[in-house]
Length: 114
Length: 117
Image (cartoon, rainbow over all chains, first blue to last red; front, side, top):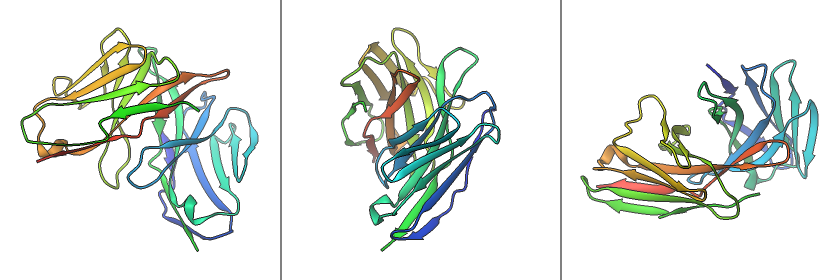
């Protein structure tokens, strides 16, 4: 059973702070990792993908991957109230039938307080 | 990014009727699409994998006769909720894999909110 674990939170940070979201995964062979943001009542939106160990930066977002520890994180710098959402970590895996599907964590709810 | 659309965005129907939801990939071809359901304050639940030109693969516990999936073209998958009942009221979201340089990436449609009275 492929598993993706996230701290469900809620995580609350003040505006301007760094929000740190963490995710661990069970399949050591996983090669790609995704972070989605889901606002209440809306569908998930892709914000970051990462494939290599280390950091990947995109604006205020930084994804960090450590395959040895099976750990991927998302840092949000200068957090804004508009960042308040649930953040989903997702890892693809190949089923026995040969098709690919994403396994999602349960999500971490982030609240950024003005 | 990529664009995935869904129609309708919201539907209200009477118990016992069938409802069809369309999912389209607007700027890419998708051999594989996915259908999810999400209840309020709960996680996404994968219902089925929709494969172009072949039968859908349903997750355990999802009734294939209740949730009919058709993926007749590379840009369109449909989910039909047959004989809908109030417990089928939920947020239905489709997604599609888009092939990139390094990896396929999954993009979500905006979702369809179904309310069965």
